[in-house]
Image (tube, rainbow, N blue to C red; front, side, top):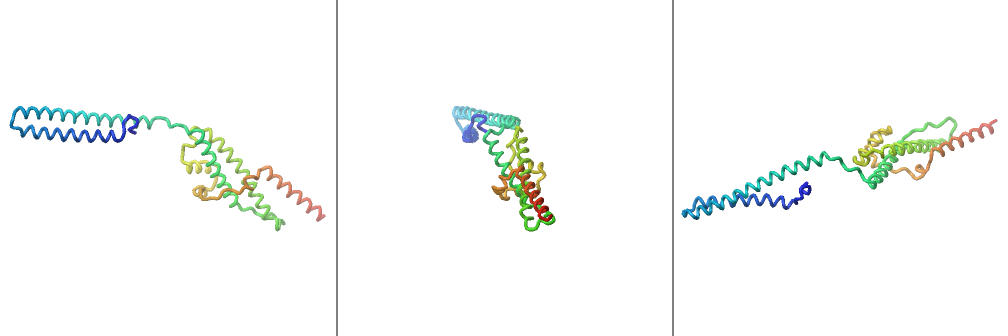
Length: 219
């Protein structure tokens, strides 16, 4: 804060020491003037006392002015609009936010229980895995849209990362306990990140073709 007034911490400390020395000198001259037996000596010491006392008063006045100026500078800084995060900070926050939301989305997908359809048998596990990938792919698209809308705000990246993640994740309806521990969650596997929703539709087509083949063979 002192730099706002173009004064260093050492200079401010020196001002306090100067006031202490002025006071000590004034006291010394006053004591010696009162004890002097010679009138001329007493007068000379009295004038020295007055100069030391005046210097002390001026130093105190300067300290009081400095205190007022510091308070005014602090008030101005508090009322001044905060600088917007720069491009590098915004880009970094986008990456951090995306990584956190992907962890939460994958955690949610893994915890989703998929009921096997009747007659699936050994393929039920593969079908459940495909459903999880599909759900994750759609959520991944949703969170990208949310980030795109959020990044246009002037305050994007200004709040702490944990608060930012919690705010966006809650907007997406993600699990609150998981949000609180998002840093401990694993990153999604590469296969999940590469899985696209249109590929998920292909899984349904494959399943339909398999069902048709099973029906024809049974016929």
